[in-house]
Image (cartoon, rainbow, N blue to C red; front, top):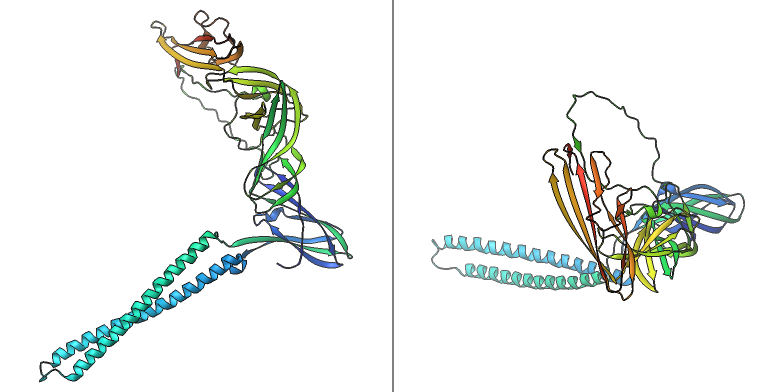
Length: 509
């Protein structure tokens, strides 16, 4: 990597669903003619094909990303480098001592083998010799002395090797305490420029990096009967770059997603033998395709950003610093204040509690994107909730947690019977709800239960009014609404009984 090193701080970052676009700017003096500048400190995961360089006052001939590995003690901190060098010397000394020990071990084996062979030959010579020769005694003593010397030398070397092993273990432990050292992959951008004459050039460099993303995350504050709703964004980045004091923007566009028309396939018609009619039914959950208050179902996890089918770009009014630690940074975008309708609602089939609820209108000129909402009530945190995609001017609901003064319990019972003559099937379900008020004041809340909704003529569903609490009726979606009023320290029982009736040819109820 060669060229004049320049500084080009990050001016703007645009976050997408799964990546980010980094825009750097710099004013640099250039001589007339061709020159080359180098911008270091770039994330090594930057996408090469996304690199774009523009210059005012000069021509950009080429821009490229260069990468290299930084390996060796020279890149380590001073303390770590000293420990690494000490460990290298100790391991080299141990290898040398271990080599000497192996030499002495081999010499001792040869001496023992030679003494064994000489002893066998002396035994053969003794059968014809008149007495034990002095030369034999001298040779055996020499073998014994040499073997003893080799054993002592080998024992000393083994002791030295063990001492080196202990010293190596201590240095390795100190290295682990100082932190792991791994080879560093660094990247830099090289830009070739040509200027007609010497002067100052404004250089803009932009590129896309992965390991960065954002999701909508909002904050709501309830004060009296007004809700202060603040729209925001939660961003994460682990690119290796520090984006300090930058302009942050958040886009719902998907630059990596391809767009292509759907394929057309043949629709084949076939004739088959007429079969006896039989209706197979099954219970299913019906999703309501709408925004705002009508959309009660929320996904457990939002895989992407729901923008309502239209790409949007939102910019924060404040400058933000992002650190490459993978932690969340919350950025406020804008806010609005709305008058809220406050009430309480209970859906015992989903949760055994009575929830506080506010209904307000999106007072902003742009939609609220689907995402979690942090709730603040009475000066403290009230937990978290979620909102769906809410169009501008649409009404939406926020749940502010359970009302501790109200209790509700749900019991169910089912009875099945088949009419013998007609074979008609009847399923009677009974739902009993018990509510209690622990407050010393009268409290009312809205109760919602649901019954199945039939989509075919052979299956009917009706509420048994005589056995149910008076006034229970279901809307077209099968939701039964009922207002419950409880006097101080009072209890109430609500009973819902409905019958599901199907013909004999219907299976699956």
